[in-house]
Length: 236
Image (cartoon, rainbow, N blue to C red):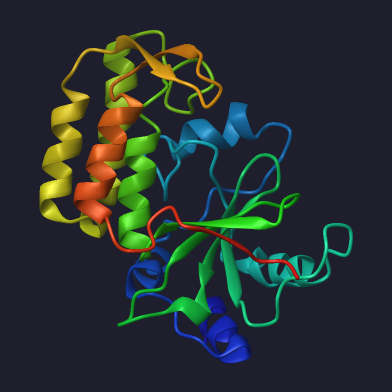
């Protein structure tokens, strides 16, 4: 048995086939976290980017660390317990400690929704109906604001594009064919400046390959379903 099979047996669920493929293809390992990760490990990963290496505020949880993440989620007394009907299996996190999880209890027709779970709030958000849709969403979202904080950033725009294309190459087999065409078309554009509206009515300036309005249109068209971006309370 491997780590995924152990987790499936312990928690009584079946991982999506794509996640198993990612594991088999060694795409779920970003290397050991260390102070020298950026200087030593990251450049090696860039040669064949693993799962969502260049995504926005996403850090992969190595499968061997998932059991510990589940335990931490269940014992997070500081922020309150989780409603017992909700079954979460983490697979990613943000730099601030929020989680990206499979929500097992929402599985429908072999689709396990991907949910964003803040560590210090009570409201979760459904991001995609399955891992394939989530992958495409993450690849798109990383293109809306491109600056020195972007993991694929390079002052040389040609090199920046090369980073994106290298990631797409290692992700092609997990995407729908026409999504690959959409991403390649976006990558062919020049980076441009644009403005967008904030909730308080003011405007903010951005720079990227995709505006937030274009992103929303693509998400609705390509991965839209009844519960897309739906929020709900996950703590009692």
